[in-house]
Image (cartoon, rainbow, N blue to C red; front, side, top):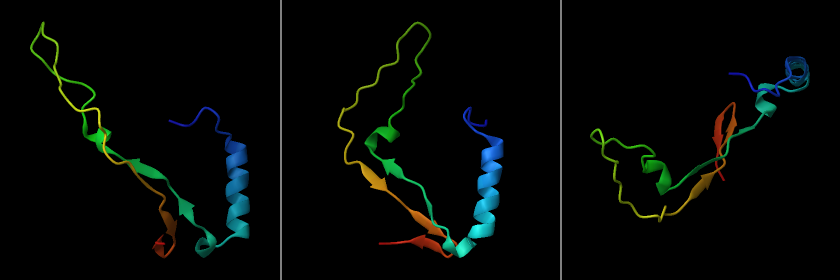
Length: 79
């Protein structure tokens, strides 16, 4: 599904300008990501008909880790 704010003409112009002004070895792609204990907990449950699902869990999500990998044509950059 394409983003509602996507402008195909603007995108095409940017891709064209990037392709004539840069080589692949000049590009670095960034993608921020994070992880904590909350992502392991189910958001939906199952129970017999007529019964509510019950879940007992701690609200301590643990340590949150954030990473910002930098991908180049030669692989990831590590610091």
